Amino acid sequence: MLSRNALFVLVVIGCCTSASLAIYQDCGSLDGAIEGLEVSKCAATARRCILRRNTNATMTIKFKTNTDSDSLKAVVHGMIMGMPVPFSLPNPNGCKDSGVDCPIHAGNSYQYVTSMPILSSYPRVTVDIKWEIQDAQGRDIICAMIPAKIA
Image 1 (cartoon, one colour):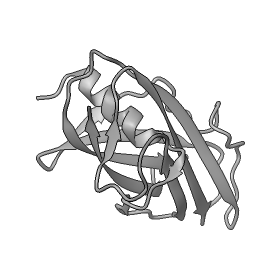
Image 2 (cartoon, rainbow, N blue to C red; image 1 turned 135 degrees about the vertical axis):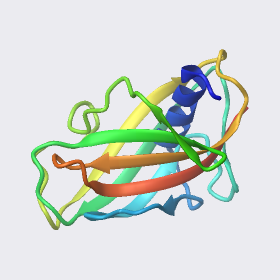
Image 3 (cartoon, rainbow, N blue to C red; image 1 turned 30 degrees about the horizontal axis):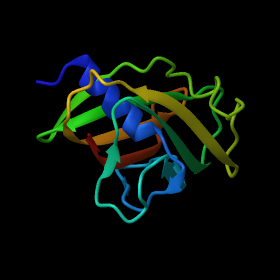
Image 4 (cartoon, helix red, strand yellow; image 1 turned 90 degrees about the horizontal axis):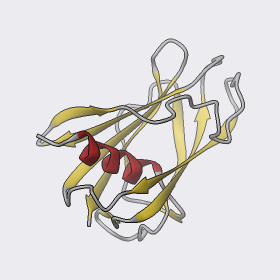
């Protein structure tokens, strides 16, 4: 079982971007659509996003919403052998320090940005990162699955 540090690394991997990442898959966006997803220092042509320990990763998700919401929440899981392992984010508030001003409105596009350190103490692990941005009712506006590896 992964430690919280391993999960944090997975979250960092999933939330960081700077080059357009075409390897993500939509994993059940209900009330919106992903328009783009980038992770810093992640090759756009890679099968897995390689996240190097002792660096910072930045993730950018461009999305369009089909619903109005007064708040947003980021929810992240590391998928290990098909099992979701929840990770508590330092800032799950999708309206604070993320580039998104709430409330959000149906039909509009937004850009969510977050950055996290990938600590040298994180274990080297291969994981799929499930990153969700949820509305005030807890419904997924977007859901992205990002194959990653902590190196």
